[in-house]
Image (tube, rainbow, N blue to C red; front, side, top):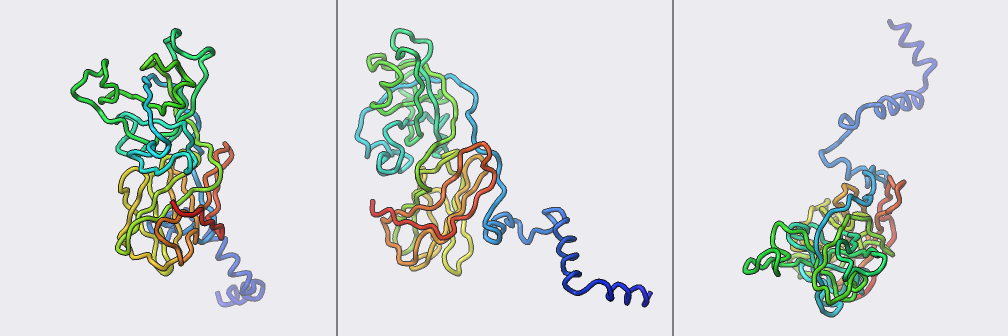
Length: 305
């Protein structure tokens, strides 16, 4: 037995032994190598990349109805708490969703493709489609029947579209039109934007311009020497935390509804002020986008609201 051990040490150096050990560990299942339950997040920090599910693809067509509402660009944020949809990258193609689609704010930022159907009298010639982003909630009206004014009552699926965009689908005199809709990936320019609000005792972050799925499932924040902290949804796309973050460089981790996540490390400098907006990395929308690097050093102060 001693002879065998001596022989092994003779032919295998210490560096080679370490290589064998690393190979053995790497061959273990993921759950054997995890350090904590949230080790997938730690892997992002260690390796700068993360496994992700497939990006959102166009979903099946479903039936609904659509109306339109008037207002200025700054009034289209509504229940999602977007301050100015044009400035924040959503344009005028926005819609308020009935409760069945809005889901208490979880659908904020999601993108839909609509087309006017079954109404040849008012549908635009050729039945062009319209892409809209969910930015508001269409409240129910229990005093009206569902088929005569109570279009946003549960369980109806309904889109109340911004006036400038509705005309792309049908003539305005139609009032209400039957439509077909489906979820589609959100195409965005630039990165995810983080607007910092709140006060010295807690911070709020409005997350906008999210590509891919568009709607956010969860947000985590990390300050200097402070561990990752899960933020709570305040309403719409406003997230909050009571963790003291003043004077700290901030990193954010955004998880979309399709299960993918994006990390923007040190996207906010330590001298940040309330009201400023910073831009991190964004999700890719191509079919082959399977891995995503963390935010790295990319950082941009977009300015004040």
